[in-house]
Length: 573
Image (cartoon, rainbow, N blue to C red; front, side):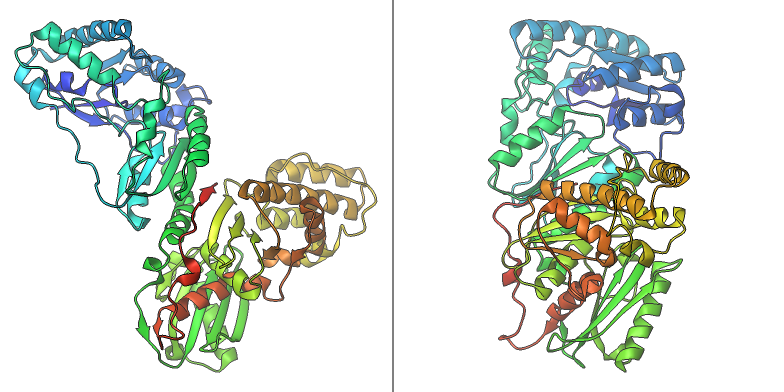
């Protein structure tokens, strides 16, 4: 039997089941939109393109839509022209709950029943209709809720894997609450449809309903331990609710956005893991081990460099190594660890625990635990200077600003990794364009004369702009200052979003860029703390977490007291 796919919680799936349908929510995330981009408008949201992609790939033959928004209307038009579907129907669901709306929905239900029954060659089965109402079993204990716009099943499965509590999918299509009361007995067809129309309209409203105050019940649950708020790129409806929740809840809150492709879900993994760690760091500390030789290693596998720190039992840095990552994270980590052990005069078996972090952390199989670079940079920065409250790290492939509390716990963080804009890779590409190495570029721009503005942060367009400036015989210092100013502005904007406050510390290799540091200090209106261990900060934090995994005396044993849950956390990309 063919499956009948639907995309909205207002879809009358019980009515379709009464005609023999097997209803399935269409919520997969494709690898990309190769076919959808050829036949659909470029501004259709990722979910709309995912629907088109599924149909064009032959996965779907029967589809019932609801006019949620303009995207769904456009998708319906595209799919009608494609002639790929055996059955396509769109319900005109009104966005209000009044009596007139209810009467209109009854008419819509009758139209669908007539069309679907004729297509199937079946008639309405009242018993099947009644049996179709099965209320979902809610999560009753401590849990995390995913709210906002629909989340693809692949991304939701990733969320489930990394969170420290059970996860409830309460996004727009999944918080369905039809038939919480059984259909009325001894009712005829007209009465059943009238009751059913009321049930459909009376659900926990989506943000497209005129009155969506009833959504507060989704986040006023005393068992909630945290909220992940998901939005889809180009969809504005749910951004407003996020702002409201942020103002009215005290629980940990993470905002993420996807374009509805599998690739975008992978980009979000670091934020999800860091959010999970901030809620329950003890759970992420790994299995405790017995004290051996008393040496602990942290490996920070970045896209550009791999850094290793080895600590002794007194939390003293025995050695710190920085090497280029090279072609593979695992090979680069092995090479850097060998070099660190050689410099420290140690063997691999002398290391009691090894924790990995950074871009390539999961590729390193030799580690005892992997922890995100956000949590590790926070730990390392707090160790280097306990007065630091904001950490700025411009990495090779992303930039991040992390806000800490007085105990060094992550209060808030924000990342930019959608493109190379404002990252170390951006600076590297610009240095190559200007035929300079990074050391030369780090000193240029300190004594500029003309205040040049680089108008584009896109690496490709910025490169063209730099080439044009070179052709105009602009001074090297002036061009470099313009680049530094562009990166500093981007970073300062992240700091503002995260609520940055004194003291500021800059970590990572880009902290050696004197011109950028000076320009960023001007943008922030403060002085940046630059430790001589700045580039080792992530590896240092990883090594400190490695120490936490060892059973030692109760006096010195890490009890997670410095990484307790902060009363209000709000994280966003």
